[in-house]
Image 1 (cartoon, rainbow, N blue to C red):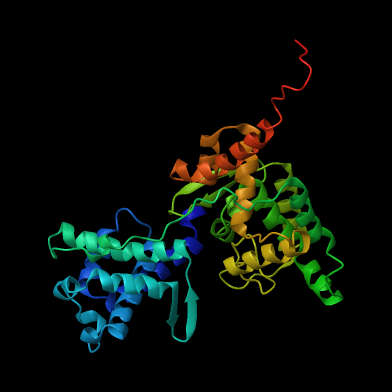
Image 2: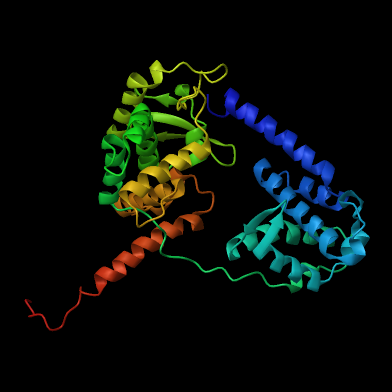
Length: 356
């Protein structure tokens, strides 16, 4: 149950193996830096940092003639001291559109800033421990990130349209597509109803076991992004959707070995994957809300905005959504504030008769 379930134990074990594999490919300065982050960062974050640092070292070998014959494991602090701010700027430009094993990866300003963060962190670590004297990343400005107030979310009509698309299908579906959708109708409806009415992350939904859900007191246990455990509560709509799914679909599926505990199963009897949840959200939202690009995170934004609109309690929104930093929650608050500003435009009209 929760973080003690077999699913999360296996997930952590898999991540640990991957992290150790990546460490064997990196040079010692990078390894030391990543170990220094153990206390304050999640394992999944350190894995992503390791990938980003590998990309940097591969770039140096490929693009810097003086390092062309070096192996990544051979890089030391003296080598990193030779890197100039011009090299860092070239790497940052490379990240805009980099080619990795034949695939093109295009990064916007946000993506570039994220992938530069581990490199800047490594140099700060080396400076702090006096392994090197200069930090070439400090002279390179990061791309400017614009705060987007127009977070994509759905209104009540659009939410109902998405749920109705699951219940009733669509004229745009072929007979084959409708037949296939009918097989997972109750599962898909339960997943979207749960996400729209509780704001949970797609990873939190993917990790749910049957034992995590208590229909007697309408609560469920989730494992947050950082590995912590939390209890959330749901209303009648979620209770009905999950009950229907369990009684009309889930109890008639024979799970694969080792998959018996999972709440949401694929037609193959396996725990539904994150990709599968993302795809079903996109499938039904394209039918019902074709003018908006809806993802699982947009369902979360929809819930967060609606909850703040109803309660006016920003700390409650932060707590329910599992935001460690309340500034993250301000995004939802800002959207409501913008609505209030729009309403204010007609609040005062000196041409109206004074009824006082």
